[in-house]
Length: 280
Length: 356
Image 1 (spheres, one colour):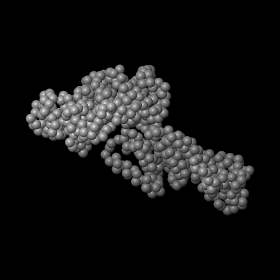
Image 2 (cartoon, each protein chain N blue to C red):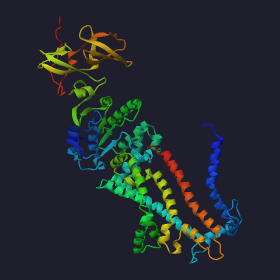
Image 3 (tube, each protein chain N blue to C red):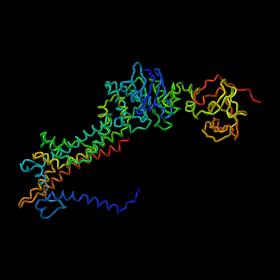
Image 4 (cartoon, each protein chain N blue to C red):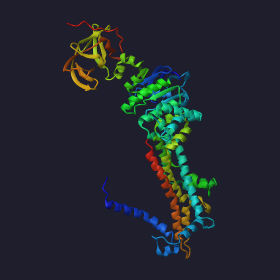
């Protein structure tokens, strides 16, 4: 055992405080009124307007059309995040399965083509994607929000590497045990990939949750707005003597933070459990 | 239960590498046949072709009455035990054993009965609900065998199943496999590189070298009459002494010393003598002592005869000296063709008259 050095701890404590400070500021400030924030800056201590603010943010109808609530936006973000993560995992697992276990011409070439798309960010293909969705009349739909972003080179790559590390004997044993390609995938590969799935779910959920540019392009109907757009919308009301509802923006930001944090916390447990359990 | 017939079986890999060529073998019903050879001799490839995990490039394999060349592994009615066990890590022992039956739509009650029976036979009862990672190497190996047993297949295929176990466990598992196979009477093909395992397990041994069969026979036949210098050197520990000798006037001469009489034409030959067939005497082949390996029950004495190394087994109390003379019964001399390595079937050798 190493001797505990107080200086090390001091550095770690300072680091933790430094990282946690903005979150504390956001949470605390969200419980004060907009005017207090505007005049007094950010708060480190809780105020008295917390319940009202959160209640308003979640239920009050707002926006131009006046019928989108925070809860609605929360749900939209949730659909985006979960749809994204699940879709990407399903799609990339199947792609990786084909690449690793089926012998077909140019499999390696296909893999590298998929892999090179890793280098292309969404922004590069955002106009053509938009046009395709528009022609298919999928603007302002969840399908349009989610499907075009589902192809995942990252996921395919990770699953491919993982499948390659699964011993060949397992496949051979399964073949002798009369498990066809479909059964092998469902009965053996998917359960073995649990840890991989958890890891990718974390990454992809957060990625989908935080999408900003694509939803802005795809949705004009406010009932499809996500939380990220909601926060932006609140701060965009700098008209005349009106001040932005800082408290509401903070409250939304705090709400927006909770689901990804939950996902990370929940899946990390599985993730670590999976890591320590598997011995291959 | 079934017999396995291999007719002119060969395997050519892409790129023209011939891993196995022209193997003909009949494994009769209930027989335990061991394929043995050094690594890269094609024994595993051969087994995998029987299992259906490798394509058969040439020839024909039949299990029972059916030619199985074009059948999927699952349709061949075989079960295989792998070197690394290949247990499904996320399934319990019970699920591992039941998986093959479940996929074959065996009724639930039947599956349960068979798993219970196999578990009893292999003493796996207390572990049925554990995952493989919570088992020791020997227990995992048992599960792998259980998975094969519950299927009640026409044949068991073993691919070096004991290689991952420690030496002690290997010996006890070896015995168990043998007993189990006798009890079930299932035709078995077993691949190993360990000649001792091969000798102790086999009804018949198949010694492979470079993708071809060198010799087929019972362990004792192979031991006492190796068909070639390769088999002679591979089977038995310590390896048979193989010495350069020659025949002159019907006498086998080793380093100028008469070893026996033989009805063969003059010329160079390779003389094989097992370590246990050499004894120290007052007369015979003069050797100088090199070093001694103590094994407890006996000792292996390494000597030089002229420039050639040879080993003999002696009881631990036997006196040794720097210079000794060795003798061997002429029946214990194995003669091989020097260039081809094939055994020369020489009409019995006799002790020559003592030379004055």
